Image (cartoon, rainbow, N blue to C red; front, side, top):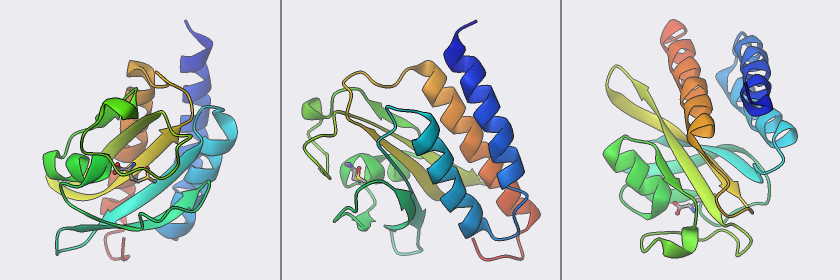
Length: 161
Ligand code: SME
């Protein structure tokens, strides 16, 4: 078994605990911190939430501030993931024709949708300064995190997201 899978499992357990936190914003912020601090090639970690007008708004994040705080569905990697409701993984952003650059240092990006009852509610976005940074294990790991966030949001659906 690779050390990477074990490390991901340990972080997942911590995230389960974090999601016990009453305020989902606080939990999302802590998830950003845990991911960025524990995985060296996760250089920027953030959440975008969907509104009813076809836009994504940046909420919690760790890493350098970005100018892309509001993104229209269909625009960039984030907007494409929102439109297709599927994980978008690119291991070389220079090959992308529909891409919004936050920093020239970024080489790879993965965006994972957060779904609830078939509805897209937001996404987790990770940028890496490494080429070919992400593999299937990263994808599975991040999809599990988004699944946990979705469950947590359903359980406490009286909260705002
Ligand atoms: N690169 C993204 C924009 C958001 S930043 O990565 C934080 C995109 O193409 O949608």
